[in-house]
Image (cartoon, rainbow, N blue to C red; front, side):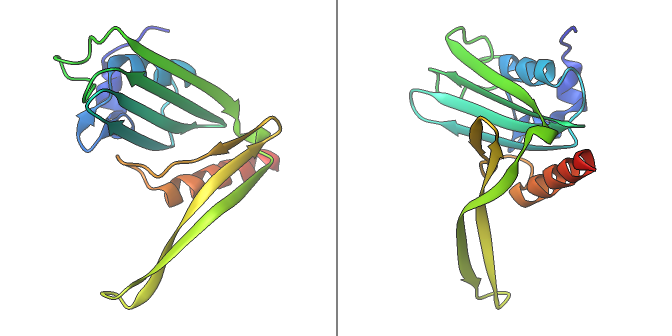
Length: 162
């Protein structure tokens, strides 16, 4: 499979954080792990300090769950021309069949009162249980909603079990 910058056009919403494009090494890892399949749903998070930037993403591609993480000792590392050529980056990732998920778990629930809409709202910390690992999902800083991602993942899991 050849990497193409077309990934930035075709998967933009799945490899950007607040309009900032992910570094090429990270996008290539996601595309490679997904075997070129477009994501049905995704979570993206980027964190940056004065010394380091980390990108991480989950992609749901058909019947597979893809995870990638990339870290570089560079402030605000991204897909821009000025920072994309960072050579000291570490990229890791994996792909697992959705069918290998044994259960979904809520490890924490936060609730608060929304006084504007006069209702209680909440957020859950989700963990996926695989036979050999517990994989926590993260709240996205970029596009995507954790609730929508969990819903899409559960639907794919149920379909595969039937």
